[in-house]
Length: 366
Ligand code: COA
Image (cartoon, rainbow, N blue to C red; front, top):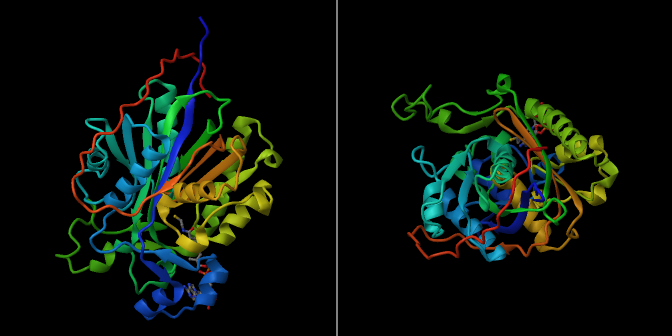
């Protein structure tokens, strides 16, 4: 009997951006910030970002992006993973409700918290679950509403972050197929946990309102230190994942890094050795969307058909924790869809059941 070792293959991509656009000038005026459009563009590469309306939650964006990914693959999912730092509620996780609203029945569903590395952590987990036969069609969503946790008066963060969601539907497939995950790398360093943090709202400082320290409820970032860590960790992780695949930097045809800051992205790609014409992203138009950043950039690049299916692709991300992750894959042959945010109503429209394929697992892992 022939043994086949499956891997994860991207089968569908979807995205959702809330319609409200905030320009740099909008952000400056709202917080009466000592900044300028010119400073923000030249120091970060960001010109505008999206902001969800008050009645639109992370789960709403996740449902819309997830539905678009399912429709793009014309298939269902047997697991839902939502990577987010801005869940709808502290308890329960957002993913089960998203799965329910997508009409996926009683599939397993959970949130993953790795801040801006969350989506690539999710892709790594989902790939492992496919390779070990735990599921065959995981839906991995990155969704965020940072507008809810950003202090509009804090120029270190207010000019950077935006809202949105992106999703990929994976399936078990062959390593030679376009969209196949070739290798993953991930890591963390908790000694830097204070560099990116929300002080209150957790077990250490549970009730910010009663303690009259509402400011501690906001997301804070020590930008300059984060900058150095982001360049170092994404560079090292990119090199590590390329080593696992055996691809040289010259073989990488598409590079998508976490859309944090154009200067960070350029430093990483320069150090790894990926030339500018092979770098893709949408930072200028959406800002840093944290866990949604990589799938939104994937969806945008795929929608514009900028990369041919089968092209060796390097994804890398860095975030609070500190955490980082990289995934090497080939560019998928997919037709991405974009969806408007959906109203927060329970939608139990049945989805097609996943196409099942039987795999015989080999004992080799990579
Ligand atoms: N507008 C205008 N001036 C600003 C500013 C703003 N929004 N933010 C900082 N400055 C000023 C500083 O006060 C400083 O002034 P000084 O030279 O008079 O002291 C100067 O600009 C440079 O400050 P610095 O902190 O070195 O800026 P920077 O070039 O590092 O850019 C960030 C600041 C936040 C954009 C940048 O550090 C960054 O992108 N960090 C990482 C963000 C990131 O990766 N986040 C995602 C991780 S999950």
